[in-house]
Image (cartoon, rainbow, N blue to C red; front, side, top):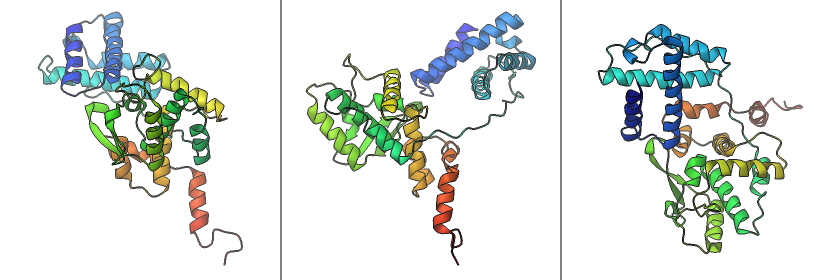
Amino acid sequence: MHDLTQQFLDYLALERGLAANSLAAYRRDLAEHVAFLHDACGKDDPAAVEEGDVIRYLTSLHRAKAAGSTISRKLTTVKQFYRYLVAERYLSADPTANVQAPRVVKTLPSTLTLEEVERLLAAPDVSALRGLRDRTMLEVLYATGLRVSELVNLKRGDVNLRMGFVRCVGKGNKERIVPLGKIAIGWITHYLDCREDDLTCLFPGLKRTPLTRAAFWCLIKRLAVRAGILKDISPHTLRHSFATHLLERGADLRAIQEMLGHASITTTQIYTHVSTDFLREVYVDAHPRARRGGG
């Protein structure tokens, strides 16, 4: 079965353009599924796999206390694998066709208030080049809502300071253009003026190569502590905050979808579930009888 899983991964990489991190996740999920079939079901031929085997696999994940979202993701991987085998005529029937994913309870993304964003942005020591780089990265992240992988892989040529936009390549190798605000443009300009190297990457690390996702994750954790932010935040928190703050100020949902690089509007719609505090503020400001003493 190894040859078939590799063919499927090659298909995802070459024809669907999946990024290396996504491919790695698919590879892990498939390896786990294949190992279960071998160890628990005694099957190494996909043609022998039945619906019951797939259900046993999902049951094993549930017993191992895997989260519903994790089980759903792993089932999606397995379903795509068997659909590929049917499409390529390796199988005559899909054993996952009638298997349903568990219901996943969607949790609202964690966001920062405007005041918390300001504190986080001000946390780096910009008197040193490294701190200036960190401040610029945070400014760009909040100004554009880029994924952290998109941010760390930016090159100098991806930023057009005169026109005020950044070009990035997101999931599925899809390119998009995202506007840059004046403040972010100012920090990028200052940062580049202070650099004395000719590296093409916009945000290099100590090894003169692009800063890694893991390094930036650790960086934002340290800066959050320095800023006195008690929330458990990640680089994605600024992306969520970018979208939520735009939506709260009347930005069009489809425009936000384009800037975030979401393939489906349903992914972006999670940001419509704004906080109850914000809803109450809007209500009090807008409703003629919301305030005490109103007549």
